Image (cartoon, rainbow, N blue to C red; front, side, top):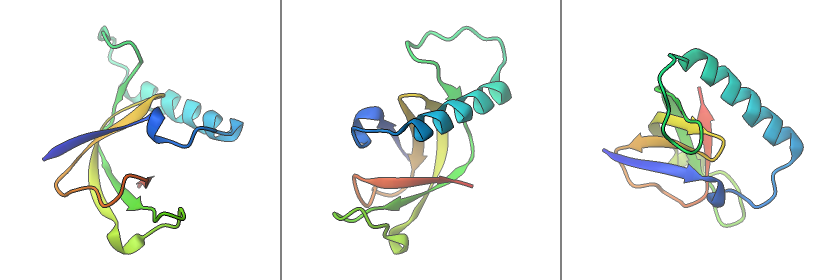
Length: 100
């Protein structure tokens, strides 16, 4: 099983305020669900996530390719990226991540 981390540098350079607000709210929700009082040694706060997600690749024009969608399992989430495990090669470098 492979493990990947999508980093902030993999995303488009400009993020609008609404996207940042959604990301902040998601981190708050995940943080509340995973708070166990353990000390974290990473530079960035990360929250464990363990659930299935869908990755849909994008073509060169940014259009989704739903026929190439794959399932992955989340590992952790931060404001800098999301980490997940997968069994097959990623179909593209640009992907849309859907959390069910």
